[in-house]
Image: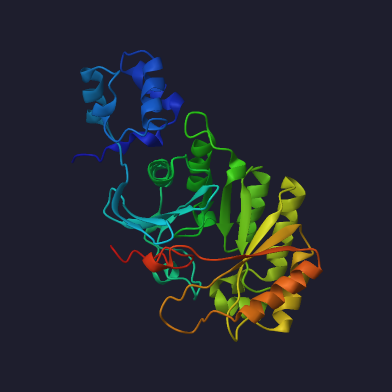
Length: 347
């Protein structure tokens, strides 16, 4: 029975060097191949022009490069670009390029589907098929960096893990991808330009702190009242707000990094004084800022955008308590690329 070839990008640089030594070649050949795979983003062994044909054939005989393919690309009226990304096994995820006047941000996916069950999110309606490999996450960033250079004449400036999936449920692969994105062997991007967004898994937030990560943390909060939050995000019934708060206090104590709370205000759900007061109280535990996010409907009507008056009431209360708050208007709504809308409609 023929064994399936391993993706060569699963090997570290040292493992690649060892592979060449075992195969009677020079160790530095491993460095060359590693550079082609990561810095130069080679999709095929034949692209590696400074390596002999015999060596390329040997690599072809032992390994594959399971690179992604951008199946379809849509451009919004506001300049947002959405990629439907085909993986080597035929599954599809989506990633988004979000431009502003001063920067371009990549919104990348970490899972095919999602492990969680947030009722307002289109991705959560999809079954989780599998975790993405580090190279598949990295490839999304490379593709968006190319689009940023092509359409906006400058390299990608920021990355947010706010696409499909819960990043902390694919912890090891997400961390490996970020290590490569920030490595001089990869994109050399500052970790301060990367934000990982979680729906709030306390144990994994503490692990991030223990691992002394340097990127930023965002938490999808949406309510600081347990009963309301578990209606919006049913899985959160397993992680009460007291546990979440404790993990965030631990995070700040270890990292000294301010937390961003992502918060959508919905009509007749959390657009009331009790919800505002609870959020203000929750924010006082750890240095933070609040992004109030415009809601993007996903067809079923249970969740509806709150009035401007309700959102302004939140802003007023937060600012009165010296908590930084901003309203984030969604981008790419006309191509279903906005927050909560990613759902593989092209797949």
